[in-house]
Length: 161
Ligand SMILES: [Zn+2]
Ligand SMILES: [Zn+2]
Image 1 (cartoon, rainbow, N blue to C red):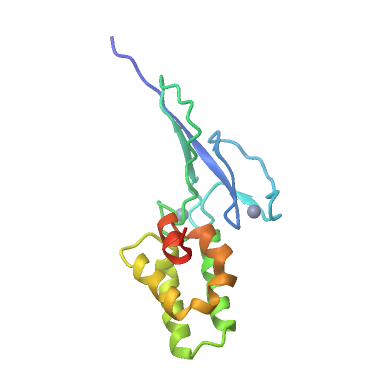
Image 2: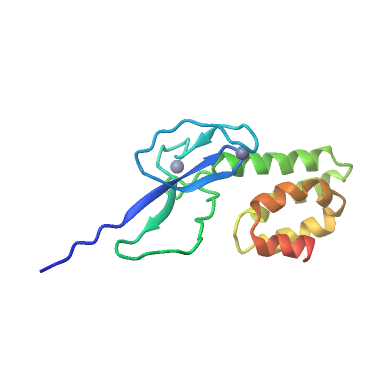
């Protein structure tokens, strides 16, 4: 006799600024709420293609007691568009660069590298070096944005620790 296993895919709820509310609400949940940290609207699907944001996957028969949390994704895996919090972070970095007193050339260098800085690409480390070199004076003010969205190794590379 065949045993049919049913896995349960939960979805995530994340505010527009990227604060994760939970990584495990049921697929059909329709709660409307706002983020307790920043007051922004909370979403559970891609604003572009409407596909749900995958959260925790419960494997049938496996009792998982770990405190593992599914990370907040930066891009929609169905349509490839950046999620609102990724866009917001990029815009924030652009503004920080724009308001600085760097030369136009350095500004452009930093703006061109900010996407690599917050995404996981082969160029992420180079982008981090560019920020450390040309954007040194901006690292303080950009700290919160970078820590929120860049990968852990990139944050370490920039800020040490
Ligand atoms: Zn929030
Ligand atoms: Zn999408």
